[in-house]
Length: 297
Image (cartoon, rainbow, N blue to C red):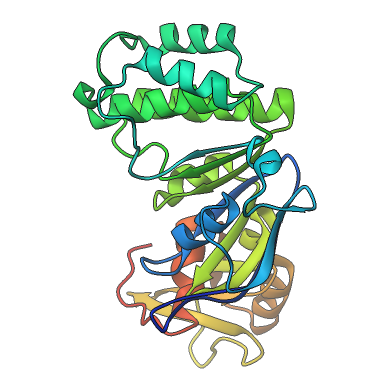
């Protein structure tokens, strides 16, 4: 389990993380999302032991991460900007990983290398960005980590390769119970792979729930009211727009609560439509200090 408790981090007076608390359960695929500058990469660098907390604590498996080689030995990290030694080939990096991670699986590495069809002797700096991401992913998975931390892991990959990467990650979770923390701006893809979601905003955790709970707590309704009737005042409306006689309303609450309230005012028509993770993200932030306008639903 990854636990972040009351974490605070400042840079030259700027508060990057402000009393942040989050929990990633064992075996979960946790999607960390938020607008640019929310603090996602800063959190990740604390979880991987790169940054020292100003206050608060960060633990993996109950032990602090910072300056703890035993804990770091169970963590694989793929940053947004992948780094390799200047003249290193894939074979060179595999040797380096094998010396760094005692759990490195050479047989799995070779199987994945052939699957990705990467030349082991070519210098990695000559690879395309997408190929470098593939190399980083196969090295990370072959290290057999207990915790896999991914920052924009499929950026630069084509659709077929993106699907292959996500599939291998989920297979590793299913077979070995690997805990995965992934940060990405592609919320559509996160919706397919994550079972937990945390939304960061200005260095604070805006909300943290399972994906099912998150989607069940915000409802999109398309409704046509009879003349003289309107939404019940008891509903917590996040956004409202109209196209002809049909209104689209985003409401915080369970489907059962919203359905019962609308049934009570007897509209001509109403339908509850599932929200995507992207829509939940937009309207949760809209409830803080983002003005949400003209969102196409």
